[in-house]
Length: 300
Image (cartoon, rainbow, N blue to C red; front, side, top):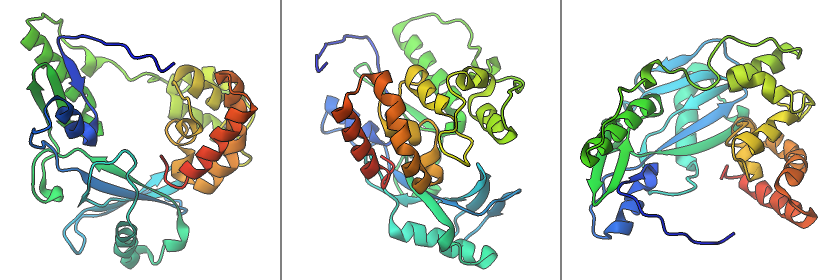
């Protein structure tokens, strides 16, 4: 709506990853940086694997891996200093580095690249990025709590430490945490689905025990030859707050991370499904379609 509202709180959490220093400096422009952002580039290759490959030490002392990933292979990763950015892009030299390092083991795979992306790690400290510790760090400044560092695999511990720190500072009493014994949403035995095996497996691996609810929203394939269903687009909008085609294709279904060309082929149908759910008229739907076409080149 464009309406602005003032919100007051005793504690505000800044958990914005590589952009955290920018948020901190809204409070004080002269604050020294906490972070040394690092770029990690990954390539998706049309190279089906049954097992992974780990190169423990490349020519420059880094670690390289090639892992099975949704019927493809995921090759990564780089570790170079980078400027904070909302939409980081893979640099040509990083892509070339990965392909060159894997060449002695599997030959030239440049023709098998189907997608690539870059992510920024919010590493704490200064110096060579590959040597920086991945532990998380909490800073408090006039009620602004900044959480940086850490990894995807430690997100629950990060959240627990932060909540307990805030509660202690505010003099609040908390019950013991149960997060270490609480299953993730969708955890449980694989449900029975009257669908082709590839589709049923994809739904379970993506949604867990929620798979039947997703399938009930539409079992028609989103694109021939792929396990994605049209009901997944509906689920993404209704249950996962997707408001843009790229939300669905890149950040919910992940198809754009696997194969940009196939994501581009699925895009028109994704827009058709989203339009009535979000109240788009024909002009808005066309504008969303064109915007997403451009975004597919950068995955932003």
